[in-house]
Length: 132
Image 1 (cartoon, rainbow, N blue to C red):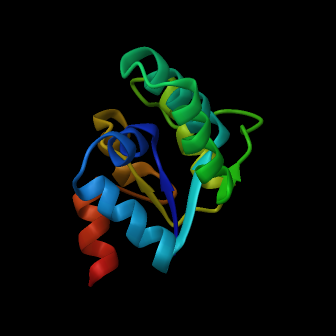
Image 2: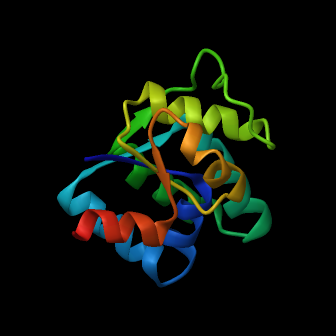
């Protein structure tokens, strides 16, 4: 299964211990990991500005992720209406990258899951789905 991690899941996977970190390791070992160029730009910003992460550590995280599949920035955002317009780019990245599953903690994306062209779940939902 090809699984796209949204930025908030990536941030949690790299800054805390818990389900997101475990999920990242599991997907890297057992499934096809995907993230988007859009997510990487946001990840750099969040790690640098909110977490005050060193440039060296940010470079290490990005290099690790770039060893996996990265969806290029889409030509246009998803046509679905989402409260946060930036999330339309994340959804378009998942669709363009042919993800089977978008994993996010973002309530705006989770709110449109029933209208999305792919499954959108939170980290716990992903864990339960993949471990069945």
